Length: 287
Ligand SMILES: CC(C)(COP(=O)(O)OP(=O)(O)OC[C@H]1O[C@@H](n2cnc3c(N)ncnc32)[C@H](O)[C@@H]1OP(=O)(O)O)[C@@H](O)C(=O)NCCC(=O)NCCS
Image (cartoon, rainbow, N blue to C red; front, side, top):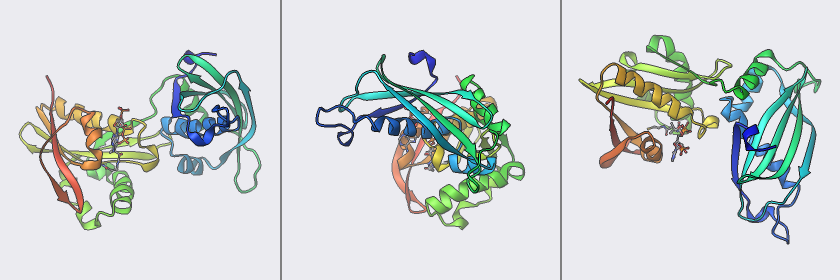
């Protein structure tokens, strides 16, 4: 088994609490590493685990876990945990995992999960949609479908995400969150392959040739897996295609690094909006 056998990797660093007297990782921790990687794997599939399983009408239970130890990981090692769905049976699915330090294969595992009804604890067939998502991901298919349209079309789904992120999580007053710009803006909503909305944002025009982006929000569980970048790219592409030469936004300071990574530069002084520190950022568009 080598790195090329995996398209999904979870990165981690061995911590003090995970090593024994010989400064090597205590064997039981490797299962924890694989489990942590699996949580990230669902994120890569754009599935917020709990909501996804709820919609699919079941849950996954570990039936069997086998671990093979080839070499030990040590304190402070940076490890890559590769994971792939290697087989889907009737009600079971197998994941193959491998832990690498650089190119060096340390540990391998096989995890067998069973799809089951959480109330009766009886197994049931893996839903066809979940099967398609897993095989699609392993085949390199996109996990997100980004739709762009008017508030009248996408408003209900955009509203769901913005309510969770801005009103419930960030405590922005509802009367500040909803404004008349929504009706005129172009909205983008990213859907996972279960059709669940997982991210949103809006595009306006603040002056001729100047795109103004805002209300960028990603489902909390899926953050850090590239959803925000994909959504921003879709909005920036639309702005460039319609001939805008510049894009600007008011970034929350905590998201500044996210926008920097998308080519935006800050300017001016930070300012307060709805009790949250912001800074204006912009980037050129087109050629
Ligand atoms: C900010 C937000 C939209 C980013 O979306 P996301 O899906 O988590 O971002 P991605 O996974 O696409 O990240 C793309 C890159 O930005 C980095 N990044 C994302 N959020 C970051 C943050 N808050 N600070 C530093 N870096 C960040 C990621 O690590 C990743 O870096 P990489 O390219 O080196 O791997 C999302 O975290 C969010 O909804 N936050 C709450 C609402 C909010 O703050 N909205 C912004 C209002 S201006």
